[in-house]
Length: 359
Image (cartoon, rainbow, N blue to C red):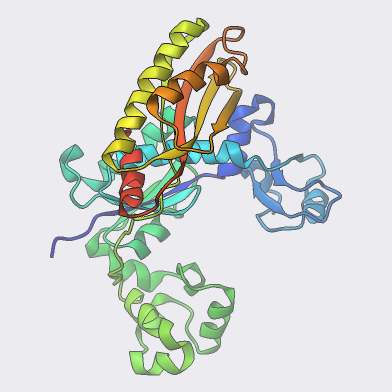
């Protein structure tokens, strides 16, 4: 069997980094995304500047405020994070045969059969990081290895903006030296249980035979037994239900002419409907996205009771665009999406893959 080449990409302080990107006045300062300082809310994310004060996600905001009264507290903006995540996944699909998202800000990529850079996974990871930075203004850390377990751990070894590689020759020794609480899949409760059994490192775990682990860890015993030896046969799986299909374009120069913008929307709509026809999908909702030169963006949607055809979409787009500041403010990016699909089958699953390829 061909040796797998797996990359785990994890965005650095994702929510906070998006906020700092979109709001220059937040950069270089301790920033907390979540509830208000005096609320019962918790920290959804925080910048690296805030982490220096001991602040971390899931911490009560009131406690975070006590640790760092000068911190800036901002509300969660899921729309902005989803937009950034979509762009990041587009980059993933340029290089990977399979992409398995774990959340908005991290994913496994299988690049075992990627031809780019002569198939050298480290160079592919470097290119992915660079394109994410270019397309989103955000930094990512990447871990490269021969299985998911080690790639996941590697991505956390050199944050932020890191790239860490664990080769097949290094895998077993790397795991043996690893503290048990650093193992992906070993949470605080399991780590405490393992330490009570005298298991403090990967080397300790490796001394246990499978039959002795089973009474303590049940179905998870085989997983722990294997990862102690650097073995993880889990495949990267990318099939997910696709709920929308879209395309966007960023202009080399900002555009203020509405007719020119409509021309771009027409071209995007043609590409999107081509993808819909290919995968036998039909939608009842269209959405346009307009990002202005100042990076502020808006979306406008229209949902019809029946399926929207390409011809009908072209009549709706000007009406949606008229409800923006296009023509008043220069525009740097436009996007067009169809959603509200009439069917969700194998075609929808495959369409999700094709979306990443820029249908």
